[in-house]
Image (cartoon, rainbow, N blue to C red; front, side, top):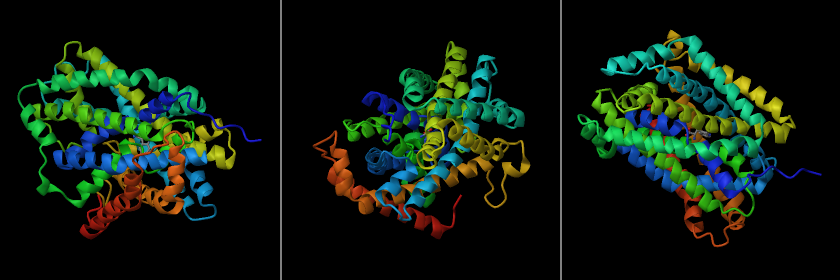
Length: 455
Ligand code: TRP
C-alpha cells in the first residue's frame, strides 16, 4: 500500500513555507540589482503588472497541478499526460532548480559573510562609495571565502531537506519572516530621511520613463516576477503536492504573492534613496545591495546590532528559498527513482556545489569567469540571466499552456474547487493561462530574438 504523502500541518503552515520559498535573495538582492540595471521605475512598474496578471495565475496553476497529482515537478506532468513529451518541461524545471541553487548559494554565502563583517564593525564610519565598493570587492574576490561560504550554505540546505517537509521547513519559516519585515521597515525609514539624494532615488525608483522600455526590460521584469515567486520550474508544483485537499488554493496563492511583492518593494524603497545619497551607480550589478545596505545601517543608532540581525535573517530567508530549490530534484528522485531522502539530498547538494564553483570565483578571483568571452559578464550574472530569466520564462510558457489547454481548465478547476467551491477567479484564470501568459511570453522572446540582445 502506498503511504499517505506528507502534508503541511495547517493552511498557515503552507502559506509560511511557500512565502519562505518566495521571499529570499530574489526580493532583497536580485530585485534592486535588476531594477537598477533596467531603468528603475519602468522596470518596477512592469514587474508589478506581471506579478498581478501572470504570476498569480501561474502560482495557482502550479499549486493545483501539485495537489492534484500529489507528485514532484516531473511526475506531475507524467501523471496528467503519461508517455508524452510534456515530461521534458518537468525535467527542464529540475535542472533549472539545480542551476539556480548553484549561484544562489554563492550569494547566500556572501550574506553569511556579511553577518560577521557587520558584527566586527567593518562598516562603521563609511565615508564614500569607494570604501563600500572596496570592502565588497575584496571580500568576494577571495576564493577561499567565497567557496567556503558557498559550501557551508549547501550543507545547511541539505541538512534541512534531509529533515523532511513539515518538521524542517515549517518551523523555520514561522517566526523569522515578521522579524525580517520589521528591520526592513526600519531601513526604509532611515533611508528616506538621509537628506541629499533621496529625491533623486525616489524618482529613479518610482517615476517611470516609458520611452526607455526595451524587450530586455520586459523579459527581465517577467523573469524577476517568476524568480521572486519561485515559479516556472515546478517548485510550487512540489510544494502544492503537500497541501491538504481542504485548503483554499486561491487565497493561499494570493497571500504568498502579496507578501513577496511587498518585501521586494520595501527593499527597493530602502536601497534607491541610499544609493543616490552616496552616489553609487544603480547599475552596480550583483554587489549592489551589499554596498548600499551597510551604509544605511551605519547611519542608524545601534546599526551594528540591526545590521548583524538583518544579514542573519536574510541568510535564513535565503535558506528557506534554497530548501525549496533543492526540494525539487530531491522529491523527483524520491518519487520517481525511489532514492532515500538522505541520499537524494546529499547527491543533489554535491552537484549544486560543484555547479556553483565557477560562480563563486566569478567576482574577481578568476579572470576568465569574471568576464566571460562573448557575453562579457561574470559567470554568476550569466547564470542568473540564463536560468533566472530565460529558463523560468520558458518553463512558465509551457506550464500555462499545459494547464490551460492540455490538462484543461475544467479539470484544473475541479481541483481548485475542492477547498474553494465558489472559485470566482475562474474565467480570468482560464483567459490568463490560455492566452495572456503564453502570448506575452512569446512576443517578448520573439522581440529579443529580433533585436539580438540576449544578455
Ligand atoms: N523565490 C526565491 C527568492 O526570491 C528564490 C527561489 C526559490 C526560486 N525557489 C525558487 C526561484 C524556484 C525560482 C524558482 O529568493
